[in-house]
Length: 147
Length: 147
DNA sequence: GTTCATGCAAAAGATTTGCACACAG
DNA sequence: CTGTGTGCAAATCTTTTGCATGAAC
Image (cartoon, rainbow over all chains, first blue to last red; front, top):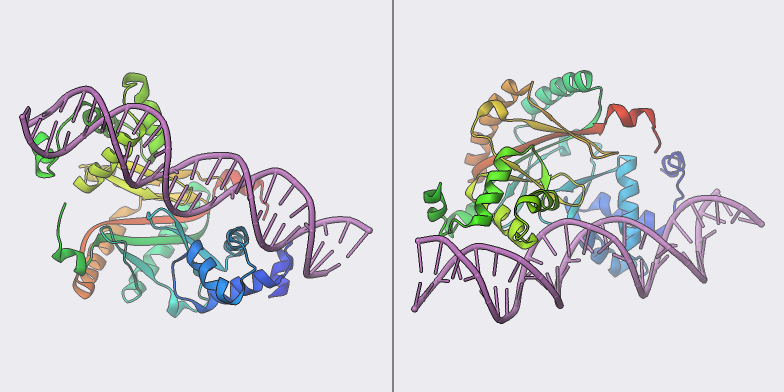
């Protein structure tokens, strides 16, 4: 792991280790503030800017995904090595609830691969990642409908 | 059109008309500021908050899509009635360039429909929209590679 | 010892809100 | 008329930056 940091001309420091460790253990789509707050219990010294800078580094290293889900702040999730953890998002536009779904992905993945290949060729892009999300109204919000 | 506004308990006003008209004519993924600036030429009176409030209204009415593309501001695009204008996004994570692609969608759409149906059922969601985006490095940025 | 990373405070942006006035219905 | 919408300025929130100090190698 230290080697991976070296690759990116970056040093392994205590704050970085703490953030990485925390991300790898936690649930998905956390905001920078949530990460900062959670870390504060065990590592009161770590500042907000270090959280941002480290998340940015981890994203560039490919260890973390940065998500923009439209709620006014970016969110971050640890990128699972493990295919079985791959998922997409179902987002309620009323209350912001985010559901991870992973049950209908086999077909999606096949298509994604194909599309990636075609896009890469046509637009001369190196494709590194994809996001698929469905937007709508969740169960809870259906009840209290108001426009 | 006025009727549609009534549905939403909203009045048709000059600023709203101007913003809607502008959105319907313009290219995609504009930021609030870009919209504000462009409008200013013809309608100097319209304020930033009206732009935000109107875009929000139009989004709730389903006439406009709000996009969070991770560049620190939300973007908006007019939702085409017309299927032939439907597109997804290819985004460069280095420079922020956004390409609309619409050439490989037939298959995607079929799959999206199927997935929507399954998700709606399983999670009891009303699915209203979807976003598909691919992230990577564009042609231009490939040249000046640096981590 | 150099160079890179950190924390803090300040700055920069984007978006939202409070309020008095204007305007649609 | 009455209630909704608007513009402006201020407030809020997220993210970035400058800089002096501290730590990694």
